[in-house]
Image: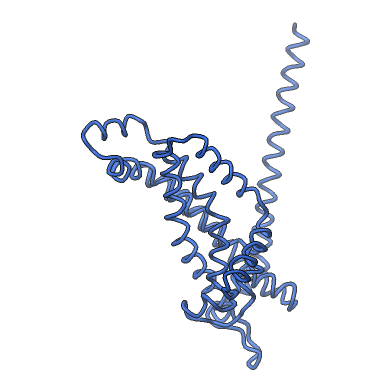
Length: 282
């Protein structure tokens, strides 16, 4: 028994050491990746870079058009996907009486989540550009991202709605509230923290997406107004990174864009965590 106990203790300690090593390796890789990108990219980030557009005549490089295109795509995508995703989640959670139909919709959403984003880009080009006649730009890219991100919004909203206790619903209905009034005044306010967190994480995915925009948003480097950008080729920051690194050989500019994207990703993830904590407290 003593020998077996000693063996178990050694086995337990060995597994603990292995788990600590795995955790330390993950942290070290993260620190190395972030540190390397910031060390290479931050010295190249200047006010001229982020506030101007590239000019072959002056020989200058600016990423302001790409920043604007990224913001345009975030705005258009979220305006379209939020009502669709939240509405579908409310229907599946609160209204759907046909469980087979609800199961089919949930299965379809989960399947869409696992499809590679490059396929969304190819299908988006075929449907929105070739079939619907849209031009490559913010609108076509945003519609493609809507299809790609919709399952994520649906699932995160569903999970948030399911965390609301059933007694809240029964109490509101018992006091005479209608179904929609109960959802609007009781269920949604108590699930808003998860919905907001899911939306912020969806914005993070939009910022980092490139494959789905290759065929739909284009590689334009000209600064357009919002209306013009909808139907004109407009490269986001991720596409600009690929453009400068692979096509133009401007490695320093590519690392500067990577540093900006990394900073945006960190800010978005921190904002999601803080927003979730604040809304839970309220």
